[in-house]
Image (cartoon, rainbow, N blue to C red; front, side, top):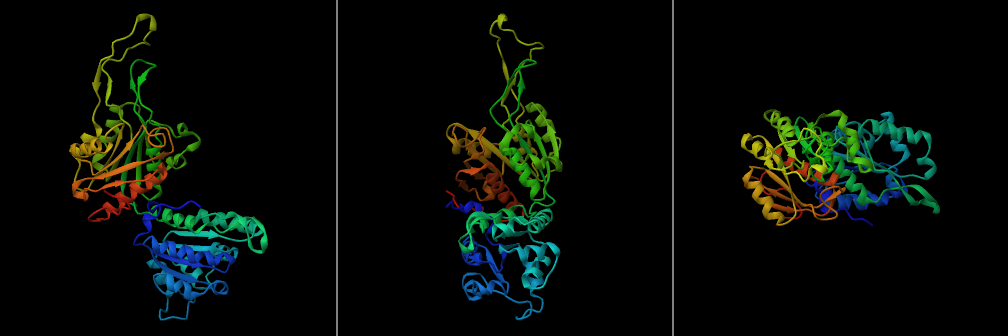
Length: 430
């Protein structure tokens, strides 16, 4: 079984999670989910339906969770427990979510504590359905799931496997580890960057040699596009300055479908990227320079295609604008600047020097010679280096998808914008 890394569950730390449990045979798995959420640092408030109590005991959850389990709208000291739970929650997760619960939630029916809490919260909601295959495939259930998705509810789809009564098929509750990751992902996308004006650069610049040839690099733009999509999903007003069209990302597209909802500026050269970024900088809160910007360009561009029969041309190079340094010089105290360092040797030393020289707040360094990280792949292995006034920590991350790494980088940005002090909330640091 795949195990979620600590980094996958980082958003759960210090967050208040309402855990709803309904009356399905898979209710026993919610006990393990409760434990995983607590171990990840969440404050867990369990809410069990009357049907859930036929399968599991409230005492078990009270012993494992952060506060006693609640089972009724009326039996307790709080006259309006659903309002308190809904308003105080950072996220609500229901696991297992039966067909009955999904139908009531989709229809807006609140006849117990859990459904009342679901209607009384503005926090992200995650449901993990579990039922027999025939029920999961029923048109009414599918319609209810579609309705909930349209309303922004996060659905952790069930898995195929052994079901109650010895049957096999789709409808088995997702593994608790996977549900916990789904809850963390919902928190990442829960709007913590609302109102933040954020610009991301993506792709590799192309510096023309003649009308058909250019000097470039192997950057695909996937990292930058993943960052833009993730920031937009978390509520930021995003501008994407990119050399790469969404269609160029191919089958492993990392969020290109979301790019239509943000300002997208297409550029080719470092000069064009500098104009697009520097001209907007004063109005921004955060800039993430994920693009691989060429350091040099041909000093002269041939007006016509260079011909082989004319011999080997002499190409004289000149430096391109150092966009990161220009931004560092202009950075206001409230602005955050995130840079990327793609290196082939002495990774940490070169990234640290770049961090200091260009007044960057956070430097994301990666070795682009690694076969599973860097250019043209869907995964990345990064080191995060923080400026001295941001605790000066160095955080080594495991191999992650670029979407996961984007989420982690934005976690750090969101923490900083909220005024978090001291060492970043990291799981591995040196």
